[in-house]
Image 1 (cartoon, rainbow, N blue to C red):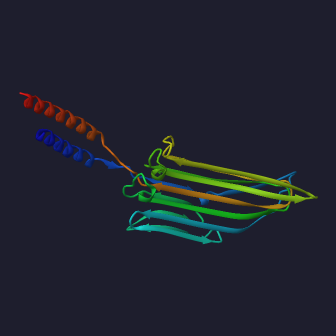
Image 2 (image 1 turned 30 degrees about the vertical axis):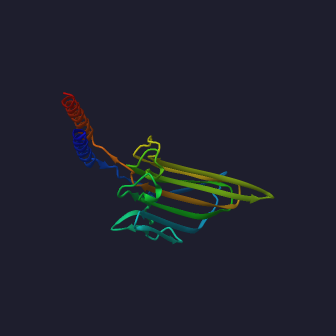
Length: 269
């Protein structure tokens, strides 16, 4: 019996060393729109280009971070134009884990993981950030409005099939219009969106391109444009053993098996 106890003790030491060599799967997530390259074009019907008036710009930003045992922080910022530089940051302990920012040249959200989580959401650090921009417009006649804006998405780390430990980043935009003329009405709507996520394990690490959307105005009327950025990330719930750790574990198990067999044979004589 004492031989088996000594063998198990030695095995426990080997296992402890193995997992001590493991690495955490930390990650980041970010989503951004290149506001400096926002393009809005208007074309008319039969050579007549309608007058389009824009108004009521607004920008809203939010960010949050949660650290088990220390608490959470949630911050928001808002302003009623698209030219001022804004930032909303959530600071937990000594680092900034989530951030949303906006200016006349950029519009972005980012988050990063920190520490080790668990399989329970209340014991898992998390961070998220988002931004929302809107604007109203009016048409005085028929025409087409087209909007184009470049986007970039990036994610690293994050866990598969673990909602609270997954990473995600997304951008979206939409346009809607309601027209009315000669006892009639018309509606037009379009949207574009792209996203990355680690949850299903099939997402690339990065993606970039253009959001292209717009509306057709059959006559005078009004509508709105909206833009969204979002990034979120939870911390991993387990450690990922390095390749050399697996080799060490197999060697240790083989050694333990040999010691147990020799002890058992010695006890039987």
